Length: 186
Ligand code: FES
Image (cartoon, rainbow, N blue to C red; front, side, top):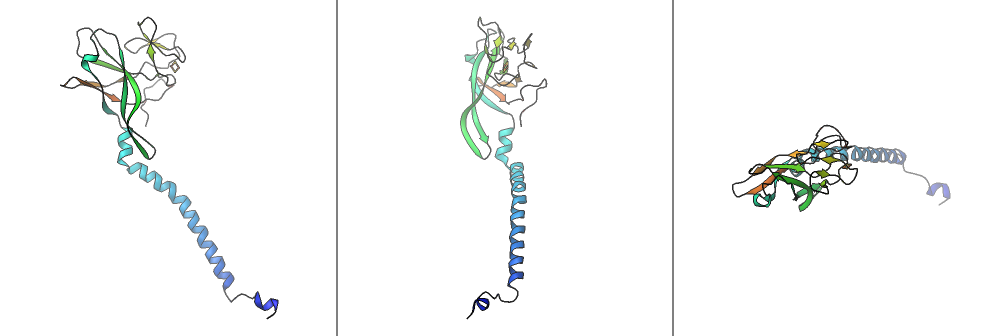
């Protein structure tokens, strides 16, 4: 058999190769298009993701741990969270300042996350107001800005409730930093 005879293709082989190449290109394009669509649809339908985004009441303290003396006490917020596709059980997600006016059972709750850029707001030296160590924003115990401060808004108040058993729970929510309006993170 000579060289030209061994390289000869059966009739229609080129057309079949072309057809298969087009089919493969269409399949790849379809996968590239549908994958993000499917991910978006899953995120939209995923009930765990929606639960993690919604504000919920998280127990943070006992009423007895917040003396009615007008002085705020700091408590960590520990709850489940979900990051992309992974759920984490009972992790610290932030902190709150809780306070009771003298003689009152009403608990006021402020997020300890600074509205300026997200640092943790602490008690100022001397214990008469809050102070953020990152850029020196200061706030009253009620959460109002003490001017001059770089924070664009007051500390973020959280809904709070006290159960019959004395358990104090806050409606934990994170808010966007650096803007004047209090807008919940999604
Ligand atoms: S992050 Fe608190 S003052 Fe800037």
